[in-house]
Length: 337
Length: 286
Image 1 (cartoon, one colour):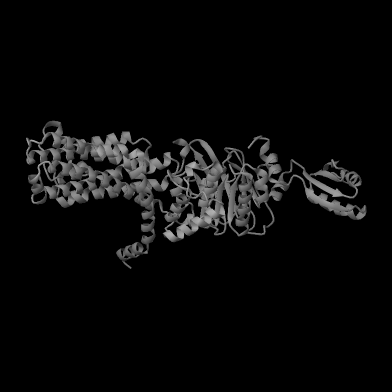
Image 2 (spheres, each protein chain N blue to C red):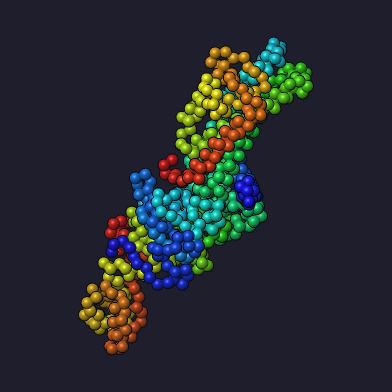
């Protein structure tokens, strides 16, 4: 693979990530040939993205450019080359951008002496909101992240997970339509993590753009409608996870078929050219097939079911997830993330 | 539509009310930080050091060996040599370079940048906070010096202040202090956006402010001290190098001397707006 996953098909909400898109499109976050260099050090290089609404996972090892990409789309840093548009707004117009965008950055720092409440409240006052509205939105966002009880305490005394949640509350307090979250699950306990995942998914379903970077791939997999895989400053693949997986030709797709006669199915499919391997599952009730052409395999399976009278229980891709895609595309370069 | 009418229309269409609310929000946060931060203690010490010396002088001089005239000249000297050239100058350096640099060091500037505030409005809000902090601090210090200086003369001192030229002199000192805070504040704010260490530019500005009297008239116009010296209500007899601090070789009208520092500050703030517009968050390098 030359580093790029083709993306096809439409998502339920807003379509899918694509490399091309009308610049300034009001419904998308668009990167057009964007590069960022820190002196001679590469941040990101020649990034072309058009991100629709829904939950988008940003995956890559440390130093791959995830945070740079997020800082670029929120105007904290400026591109060395190229253009960016967030729902039609360039990031160098914060007065317009942050009415629509909330960013939970990775910086674990807060204004000195701030309490959880004052931290969010002061930000809302910066929006130009009056006292009453600021208090209302602050209370609401604190409630959404289950931090109401600790709101009066100083942030300096919070645990890491609480600081993470208070930053999240600040990012969502003004009801943004684009939510950018840099490692939002770091430091959260399992309960808070589950609640946060639920919140992100709910926001994605409401039609928001939720762009999340995370090292926790299986959780990202659960909530992401699409992924952007990054490595060494380059976008390695992008799109719906299934589409990206299909494009990884070097690694045959793994499909687990549970059926009434796994032995027969294994012998039948193994005769096909595109099937690299067919092995019986450990429990003896299924066949794990590795194929270079998933579509051809599914056609064959239909044929066999009718011809040999095999009763199917389940047919499911076994490596059609973020973790597998990540391992195939990036894992060989960076064993850990 | 004429260009002036177009300009007026553009100006009236700007969201002034929103900007005012946002500046008020910035002020509320920054004033608390500026006044109550332990980091600002040295500015208070710097500002009130002469007041404690004058207090000591007032205690030791109970016999009244000095005259009001002499002490008025001493006070003028303290104002011109200490406050204008040292106290306000370095106090402003401490306050204004910390407005953005402090946020960067404490890694909290991004919270301002992630709010829907024009960077220019943010800069002006922070600048206003700095001006209020510096002006209030130094005006209180100078008022203290003034009060202690004349209080120890009893009735005569009271007469000098309320029925003589004293009150006018105090108001002039306070006005000059405010102008100095605006002028030097703008310069140091701009420098803090240009470089991390304010000491080198501060020394360069200090040298410029000191030696402009020997430079051509045009160069003198770009010095804040050039204008402020002319506004001082009491002249201080100075000879030799000290004359550099008091001599005005090409005086301008009082109106020009008031407007001059404001125009300089406005020009520097325009530059600072351009700098803050391009400012990136990169805490790693700090």
